[in-house]
Image (cartoon, rainbow, N blue to C red):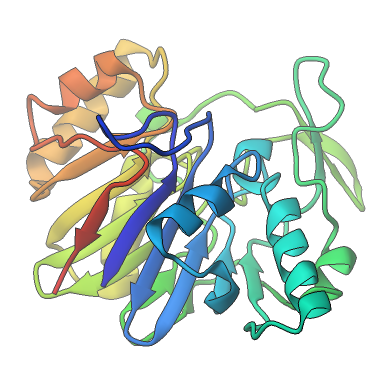
Length: 279
């Protein structure tokens, strides 16, 4: 399995890519190519082109959750495919995979829409759409973890605004927040978006779904920005017990959290341009 960071809040030093408050990761496993999130704008397309990655060959577009910093870039992906059709270029029709709540309207702090611009119906015009709350295996080794069971009291957080459902408006606890996990020779690689559901809960679900306790790496947003001390303490205790081989916290994880995590695990630098390979 190989992965490349296309969008993050920062780039690696002396790498001439673009960054923004968002996340997008390109993954290859066997013959399957996966785009995990699309960031906030079109920069993932620009960065991929500089890296020699052909996004028109992506089989699956996986959405970690419906927030704007992970989904608004989908507009650019659809433009890329539309232009390829008009110009007669070869392309793979992608399958969009997400939790059933990922494309609902959301609001927070007076902002009328912080969710995806595109509806499920609109996405169906540009590819296949597969919405699932249970886990879904994308390849023999790579799995969409589905709705995450919230297992730890210290990770529980207040609602993130409101979500507008067919049954009415409710507090948004981001039930669609999920992740990917890949079985490798070194153990599991867990790839997260924002971890609204709790980074420890995500890792536990990955271990359970994959029937593997070893954690080779966790990369992505850990949702640790000005996190309360009791949350940090619980997460540190958890990772001290799990003993991951490496951590690549990024996106929505602040410096204080990274420094704290470095006390119990091998925390490594992450940014646009990072490329990782696992057996």
